[in-house]
Image 1 (tube, rainbow, N blue to C red):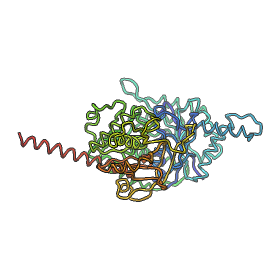
Image 2 (cartoon, rainbow, N blue to C red; image 1 turned 135 degrees about the vertical axis):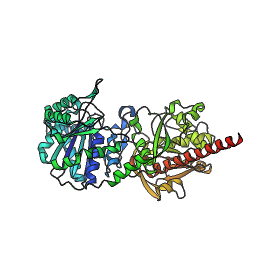
Image 3 (cartoon, rainbow, N blue to C red; image 1 turned 90 degrees about the horizontal axis):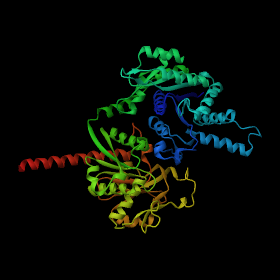
Image 4 (cartoon, rainbow, N blue to C red; image 1 turned 30 degrees about the vertical axis):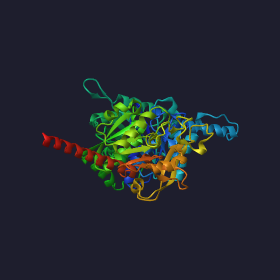
Length: 551
């Protein structure tokens, strides 16, 4: 029978429950067990698809086109799983389903209540994944913090779930914080005690406590947490702050014995862990001696999580090329023609990410022009590709008013326009071109060489597309169409003909990149950034040598 692991959080938000869930999944997979994961979010939105990145960070898109929480991105990066819309559950989805059933009369006139109807629907969602995937372990992360009023139905549901499946088939892991207080820098366990006390009031007794802490826990602190939280001392595990990368967390938790304790408490064999691929990846990351500087020219740069998968995919490309990636966040609204050299000084590659709305578009166009004319490696993703097309039309074809109809409905040169099937769409949530879509690659292009094959599929999230009536003129002047939909109607990627590496893609390759296997486009982008850096250094050294000789 599937073993169910429920992960909750206390004391404060952003403690890393998602990373803990991902890391545990990583460890169990490396021990030969099958896993699946669910993120349960207590917000009333159906999904984060209509939320501002400033509110919720990036929207992660699954293969089947679900717009989900960014934690599903962590789940997929740390494990071998491809997740679906069933792996992302929100309060909005739960209440929507229950209300729909009530309207149909499914409850036969009974009063519809949080208990049992809402909690039953939450439990049903968990059971569906267990039945469909049939994993050895189903890891369920409960979003929010214990004590939040909106999270109570989820906590009540998992309390009931243990009664349904039995203690031997379920496990509760609670993630808390050990803060350091005062001039003496003394770590305090009291917030953890209060958090667990709040959880026990609901009827949930944690089996394992993960303590976010700057340093390892002393024996005295473990003993105190064990005593007051009614948890075995060995099951009080330090989730120490990592040094360089979140990909260290599985190693930290392995050293704390988390996976062994989980297997023991679930009554399963402690299979030998084969962890060489993950440890080898970390070794490459830590041994890198060279640096590559990548500018991410975006509009949501204030919030790191807004481009979470982009940043992670760049790091993966760095690992693959044995270099450290230094990301320089360039806010496109601040870009002007007279500050481009200063803004991109020391940069070895420019990435223009996706986004929505007109704000910052002129800055993105300037960034694309700078990269194209200065031969700086350029990678445009989704809106980034569309910006490359707009810039090329304005500055190469001479269409000064060229634009996307998203930003200017009256432009005479709509090089980017609304997809035909999007006409008349009024609801914003879940209505874009979403999820896995196939494409054909054109031979003898940089995009083709990256993939090494003629067919591929990638995940999408967009409403606007390259306008086909401009294709011939673009290609005649040096902007190649390097990938299209199988029927040839939709442009999936473009690239500059006379440029070391300038590629724009309509899809989101960052969603399929992993630390142990970087996406091919990010791998090649970083490789080209490294080559550009070497060329710049060589030219600088040559100029210096020439100046010294002349002197």
